[in-house]
Image 1: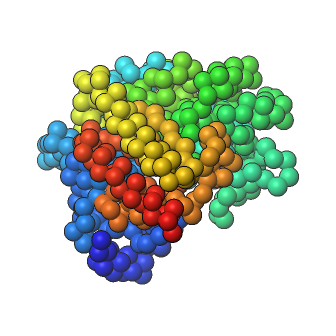
Image 2: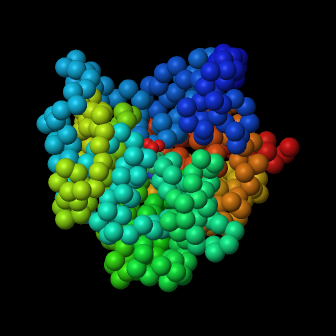
Amino acid sequence: MAYEKSIAAFKEAYSVIPGGVDSPVRAFSGVEGTPPFIERGEGGYLFDIDGNRYIDFVQSWGPLIFGHCDADIQAAVIETAKKGLSFGAPTTLETELANEIVSLFESIDKVRFVSSGTEAVMSAIRLARGVTGRDAILKFTGCYHGHSDSLLVQAGSGLATFGTPSSPGVPEDLTKHTLLATYNDILSVQQCFEALPEGIACVIIEPIAGNMGLVPADEAFLEELRYLCTKHGALLIFDEVMSGFRASLKGAQGISTVKPDIVTLGKVIGAGMPVGAFGASASIMKHLSPEGPVYQAGTLSGNPVAMAAGLTSLRKLKSNPSLYVTLANKAKKLMQGFAHAAEVVGIPLVTDVRGSMFGFFFSGKQVKNFDDALANDSKMFAKFHKGMLDRGVYLACSSYETGFICTATTDEMIEESIKAAYEVMAEIKGA
Ligand SMILES: *Cc1c(COP(=O)(O)O)cnc(C)c1O
């Protein structure tokens, strides 16, 4: 494939935008080549400015469960936009979308809309701290919850459970309140509660982790986590910004029986428009301004055009109960194809599927936590990614991301992608 125009566009972007991108992962730093600059999308396909066509398994990093340019969502957006783009005043669209979410999630009586997943999580954490009157929070290594200060932490060198900043610009005074535990390891959580028995405001987790590759939490682990949170008076936050409406209609909560205290949503909820949300029981949400003292606000929060996109998308999802089975079958077929291609040439590969989400690691060992994920062969992934891209298959440009199937992903697209995987694996092995 030719990438001349994208290479030139990237160079030009680089001169006026740091790294040439507005979100670091887009820069292709972990893989070979430069990122294709996108001209347009159509269903399950993406077209770049050089005229290359790709089967899109990234789908804007999750939001586009109906693929690109879904006619119903586009019509709703256009109709709403004709009436005005933003009012900074309440609209009934917000209540309608809130009603859809409340009816889906047992754990949510009330929900507030924001404009990104980062904002949803940041606000949920503030709410948890406000409700409990505690400062410390607990997160899991390898889970991503957006780029707010308290959550940009890595394991410290000293006491392993207390975090240190993972980015310059984040004060240690802030990250010292964030404890780190190991995904799927309840003993590591217990140790944190022992270190601060009555100090932890909340435990935040991706119940199906999608930001260290696809790594689902064990049901028993989630049950024990729920037990420990309740026992110690900490709130349990499920960050379902990615898994919400992706793993199932109710996200992880449609698969697990464990109920969180607070839920954060994003990505699919806006169908490609900037929307995030956080919700909880009425007794927790009443602490939020203006009902209560915990402050949170947003000029463009509940933006009507974004609400219309989300509402149309959610109603379409709800009206088709077999949709997630179909999506999961396609994801399984793709992963079985990749796994077989790897097996044939003798490359270790493990795969997983949750609803419309799929993940694979070049590793011989099932991945349970971030350390396991890090043990994957990321150099081999980089080669695989490049080979697939050159054959018109657009996969996330990092081995620590999740892939997505949309309703516009056809069986033919899956078969074409599997065929490409056979070729690329053979090429890698032969090299
Ligand atoms: C993407 C993501 C976020 C951040 O959402 P943005 O809209 O990128 O700010 C937070 N949590 C999880 C689990 C995510 O996948």
